[in-house]
Image (cartoon, rainbow, N blue to C red):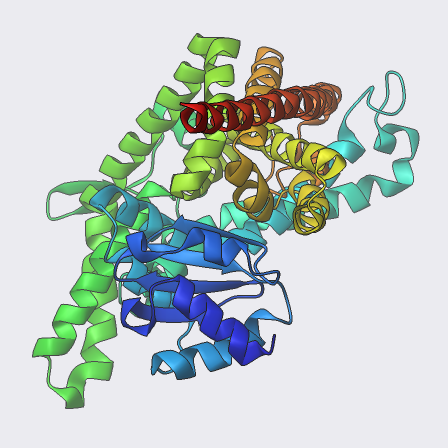
Length: 490
């Protein structure tokens, strides 16, 4: 089939051009917003060799075609529909309008945090590398690598400086991204973030000790006492302040004459937001953020391996809804306060879930005789082990159902195991086999064992469920033949 014929076949299967509201593509997938998803002919889509899988998420119906093919099919598709080519962000916005308020909030957090993930991952992995260099008993009994090789001590110190930067200046990154998402000037958002971590302020990590010693510096303005405390590693305060900044800026631009706009709008936006941040917004959201973090840590410590197992069981279903994107904000807060929290317990559980999905998919690759399914399972299974699970989960496991069941059970058992041994990540990274470097060095062995448990249970349970599924289908077929023959005899 030519690319135009493939586009036409896909269009027919999704209900025709009248059913398409918006269309874009990413590296491997067509991303479509449809008026009515009930018009989709899934069987027709599955019959196309070029279609590697489909799934519905965030108001978008996504069709996995593969790199190099998707862009060639997309061009004739938009021509057939009669719409102009769109960016993925435009399609995201169109899809978001179809979501409920909770999913819209999840998308909002995703839009803010996903763009800054590379910076956080880079800093986090550097932190993990520093931990490998400084951890005692990890490679040498009774010593760390820098104890055994003093010549690399300064290298470890330099890496530590590089690693801390993204978290110390986290409000700058979030301020830029959040203000842009809220409709304001991103550079004003970055400036606000810089104000919140200015070196003239008391470092947030020293706030607790200064509070105990009654040595918190303050401004005394018109009878008000305003604490001069920074917001290093903060998430909620900068999110709230960025929202206020964006709204003040956009409203000022409506009322200030254009001749004075470039002069007064930035000045008043930063001044008003800055004052509000340090007087009301910052202290309130700092307390709320601390309570939220304390609550999560308490829940983790209280429920123990039982809670970890339940979370591991439901992690993949949460991914289906897209709500896992909101975990990025929580993980960022946990890792930014690593001295208090010990790191993120969400990352190890996500890793257990991802490798379980990969193992289940590879089990399908081993037993299936369907050439198309075997091709999809081989590539997507390996991809899931490395932390990218969508092709495996949507293209194979959910479609067949029994591998998904095997995967979530494997994930639950492994998540209970890593929770029992309090495995935590000190950095963000690829939640899968490469995630080892993100784990606290003292817990790496338990992380590896957890992945082994997840892979083995998911793999072999999928094999068992596959045989059961095959017997069930054969029994159903035989029953159908018997019933038809019986009716014929009568």
